[in-house]
Image 1 (cartoon, one colour):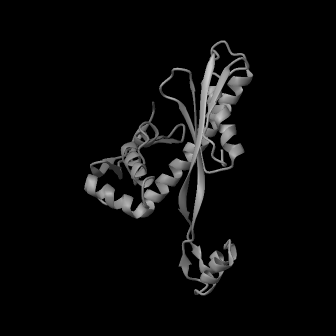
Image 2 (cartoon, one colour):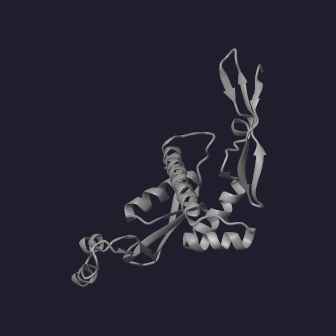
Image 3 (tube, helix red, strand yellow):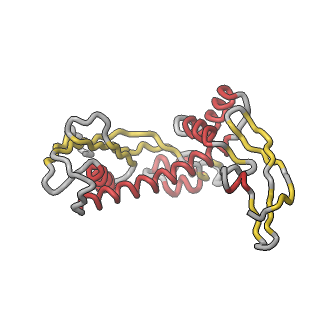
Length: 230
């Protein structure tokens, strides 16, 4: 295509078996004044980056435990070391991407409900369900910030007695709601799960039901228990 090899640097790419060094040819078309890196642009391999398999393993560990323990478990499984901040960064980035993807899918479900698309047949019956549980959360901050945000006097006095710049992690129990929608008789449902308000979760559940074929004439069966939060 008119490109000639200008240089052949090696880049470090990290796969499940550990870091490897790969020649990443840089090519240049002098007439078009355009550069080209086949390894990056064709295969998506960038120096000091991680393969999809490594990112999958790190995020699988990172969503289940602390990032420090996740890094230790990864080293036990695969035999090479990854820093806790790497696990943190990859896990949080994946979480943000997943959030965006799910929001797009739920919006597609709402659109599907509102449009009479022949390619998207409506279901005769959709079963929905909703439940909730409490999870323990914690956030690092200074003692002064914790005292300012305390919900009761005892907690405020406790953090107020510490050095203002001391790093603490106040813990709190937050409610998480999980819902599902599926066609009647279908085994695998579409799930929603969110630490948010009841209205937010129900809006997502409506989108999930739309993905499962909810229409104006669809019979909906909603299953919940008698919990106050539901």
